[in-house]
Image (cartoon, rainbow, N blue to C red; front, side):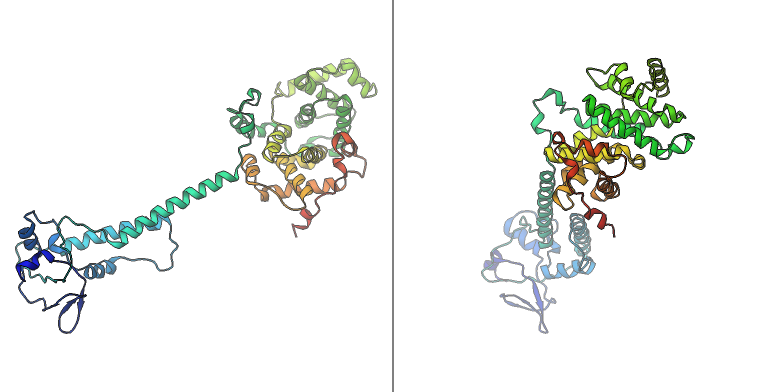
Length: 433
């Protein structure tokens, strides 16, 4: 090779033919038997710089690719994920390092090199290092996967609405602690639950008598215009007390009246006097009997009145559903129907609240509706609510029939938006078949 050509050296992928090696667009080169100078020596003479450590094994790209592809195993129809792409890149690097180690010649042995001259090609110095195409494509693929993951995270965050953003300036909303409060409620709700078959240990009363008592208390609560929290706490106190203490049939109404008195003392600002409760029970009991039952009940429950009832979950979940007044009234109508039913004790308060709102949404829209925001704040999926929701639909269907119609009469008034007159979501019952 002439000295003037030493500045126009280039590496091209060799093509093997019967006559020897051809460079694409370059000069015809004789077989590898010619004794030519090593590329490292030529570069050292031209540039005067020390050769690149891996210069002796700068073989053609096609040779490297043949060796690399031989040891690199790539699944054909495997989905490309970030983990898969990273594994392929790591495997490629290991193969390249292994091949480089194999191709480095021993300094003690004489090597013959074939230099392919390409006319018009730019000189390649030892400092020029080109990444393999596979590595470049892998890095681009990883960047694309990162971008897609960020976009998916943004979409997921957009689906969950920040329901507390409007209350950040309201100190009574305790936005900083609201999530911790409801996390505690979820953990503590089991302490407020009772065995769903506790009536089996009662010898003189049954679940039908319990339903009659609670249906009557709902009317008393409405007549006294008490707070909603009082009603739910009253029912909870009755069930927890009867689950522990056997009671005679003639004392059951006294238990209900006393539980409402305790609920009023815990929740109300203005508490009804004992004489009002005696009067509403048609003077079936004396003042002394009421006070004695109050003492017995509070000691049996060990003064534990701070329990999460379905009401506290209803308020939070209604906010998550971005409800209007119509949805709110219908949801409370449905869950008050559940207070009367003994079989609904099998469900925890949070699930009852979530199922009531889900059933109300389905009733108003005519199709299943449960947003990502509702699922996030309630921790219940649509599938988890369906069993409870179907029972609620059956209660809605028979609300105006039979003897226990207190809830239906209450929600058939204009004050409660005539919620009881809305047609039930019967399509939820058909979905199970």
